[in-house]
Length: 124
Image (tube, rainbow, N blue to C red; front, side, top):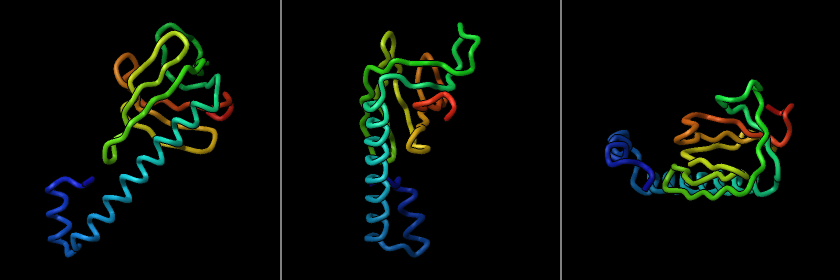
């Protein structure tokens, strides 16, 4: 179930029946799985992507990355996994599809922030 016990209780108190709560929860879970699959496909279809990642040793606002793989899993509305480039990788702690040409990921340690990725520099 996507909703916490407190959220479920609040929804029931507001008059939402259990079947509706369960249906809404399943919709969230399915949407999360679809988003993760779309993000993985985004990286699978690209050898090189560009990002607005802030890198300590770069004067450029746009970074170029050679993609090795993106491996994600989901739990309720969480997207987690790992994004591997040619020489380094980073944990993924969330993400969403912005368009057919752009995604946004929340990256974990070493980056610790939201980063947009695109197939083309101009799309950022």
